[in-house]
Length: 317
Image (cartoon, rainbow, N blue to C red; front, side, top):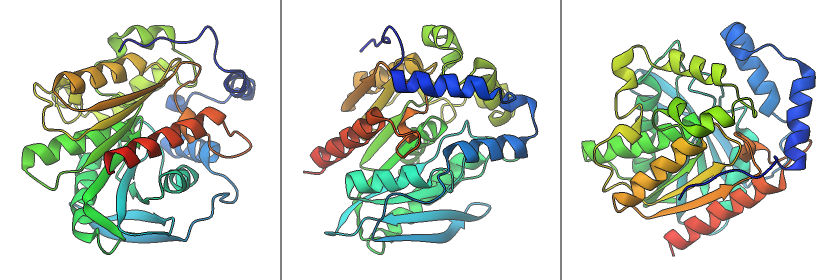
């Protein structure tokens, strides 16, 4: 399953990289957290949603330490369907429901399934395992509320990109170990799952959309101490046994520093007998999955959304 990268990023991706370089924005880890979050939200948020759905509803659900904000995307159509819990990326430090609104609309449109975007708590104010606890609480809620959501309790999907992908598979691992409500599928979009800094792609892809120093900053915010860094629910690739986890789609990008870490996790899942479908996009960078609307729409992002929809349709056929 070894994957590499193309000779160069896709031309439209290179244009985005050039624009980011020309903007000369300060490194996220060198500015206040509030400013970093605002920059991240401005980068991802569109002025007006471009994808219309039957209904979009904001709710709050009970969490382990207070209420959790969720946003429910209903594409309409035939019921029951799968319920996709989506955990946003942003290094466990950045991102929120608003900045991922267009991405979740696209997931709902492509899959024709209900999508629930989960506003889990962020580090450093709430380091590991606070965000994971929120994600697990969302799984328990979705399982109980599946019928109300127009879904099926036996067709719950955990999905996320980057840090959200980490939380998705860690939630699945936690559900298995607690004998809790088991998700039926997991969609892991370039997830960090282990010692990413020790991989070849972390060296060769440094600076393509995301800097190594930023990733180290994310880790420092999320992990309160070295014990957390070794926790299997923080770094699931460390788990001795991955058997019994739900089938997975894993998405990777050629120019992503996390490429090799994500691929190794896909290999670990497959070795444990977990059915894995792997989609690799060798001209793409980290973050490409969220570029679904103008002015930064990527055709390959559309392809990835459609590939995931196809995988889910096959899984529940």
